[in-house]
Each structure stands twice: as structure tokens, then as C-alpha cells.
Length: 260
Image 1 (cartoon, helix red, strand yellow):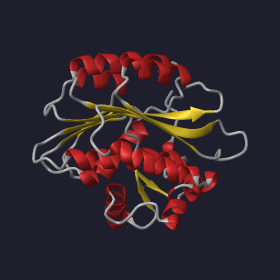
Image 2 (cartoon, one colour):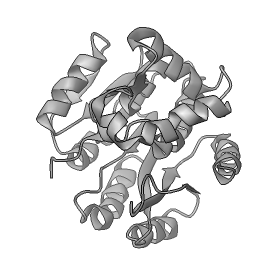
Image 3 (cartoon, helix red, strand yellow):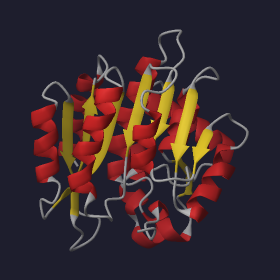
Image 4 (cartoon, one colour):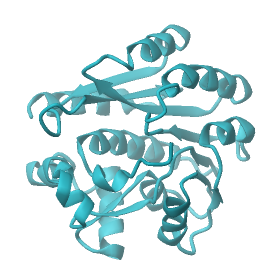
């Protein structure tokens, strides 16, 4: 249950999809001069080295963010590009931010960050990566935390649910958890990332969510498997209460991913 290590996959094409949409959503929220809450249920270590042994072993970052940088998908003023530049300036050209550091780079001192990570080593690395920036770290089950924190203070804000799905029951439990969260926090922006699998293991979960939240943004992209026989063939983001403009960015990404 605690075996997943995102260092092998950081900066892959799924991260590009997820973090580009997350960055745009956070950028929209920060345009208003009102504080907000950011909640992440499965934070990971927050900071990754793309020249590290794990990344080099899989080559996923080379086929992901490194290739995307070469293709110039994101202009310097794009929120995702700004987050990348902030992290690279602080940690080096081969540094890659997980979602917590994407959020940290874009949010303001008046905003509140709740970050949850259960894996002991990943939690310790997350604490170091966050540094002195004010954030509330939770070494706890992320989905339980999500329910207990809803509604947060401030009530404006975004929750990212991004499990590893190594616990297969997540596909069954996540729709129930999201239903509980939205009942308590109906104004919250809830973003769920999920893999698109060759097996179709995510299909029932996605169908459930689309039925219960017909106004949500449901966006999927496809890309080649990281290696022969790899089960992930794409990436999905399901966003409840999506901000204005996010659908346009999703359509732009659809066009870019289709050209890979």
C-alpha cells in the first residue's frame, strides 16, 4: 500500500496534463484578492530530480516534460511555465515540481495549503521541499483527511485528489468520497486525476462521476505507453466547479497531445 514512488514517473506526460490544468485553475483563483484554501490528498515528496536514478531508469520525464519543453507548448507567461521556472530557479534546471510545489509557486502568502502524505519517507521529503513556506502537513490517509477538512477555511479553494491507484478499491471508493466532500463543500473546486488504462479499469468510476456531476469538466488525453506492455495509455482530469477558461486550455491540450 505504501510502495508507490512517484520519482520514477515525475515529469511524465500525465504530469504535464495534470499540472498544466492545475496551474491554470490556481491562476484563475488567485485573480481575486480573496484568500483561498488548497488541499491535496496524496502530495508525494513535492520535488523531484529528473537527472536522478529513478527518472533515468524509466525515461518517462525525457518523453514527457523534456520533450514538451523542446516543443514549446507553454509560453513563459503560462501558469505552468511560471511554476516550472520558479522551481528551477530555486533548485536547478533538472528539478521538477510535484503538485504541492506547483501550488506553492502560484499561491500567495494569504492562502492556506493543506498537504497530506502517508508514506513516511515521502512525508519527510515533502516537509523538506516545502521549506519555510507556511503549509499544514498531514501524515494521514488522504481521502479521510479530505472529508474531515471539508469545508475548509477559507471556503474558496481547490482540492486535488491524486492517488496512485495501487489500491484497486480506490476506483470504487473515490466517487463516494467525492459525493461526501461536495455535500459538505458545494462551492469547492474538486479536481480528480486518474490514469487511462488499457484494461479500462477506470471506466466505471468515470462513468459514475459523469452521471452524478454532469456540469463538471471531464478531460482525457491519450499518449503512447511509457514502454511496451505498460498499462497507462492516457491521463484524465475530472474537475467539479471548473473555473472560467479551463475548458479552453483543455481543448488546447487535446490538440497538442493528439499531435504527439
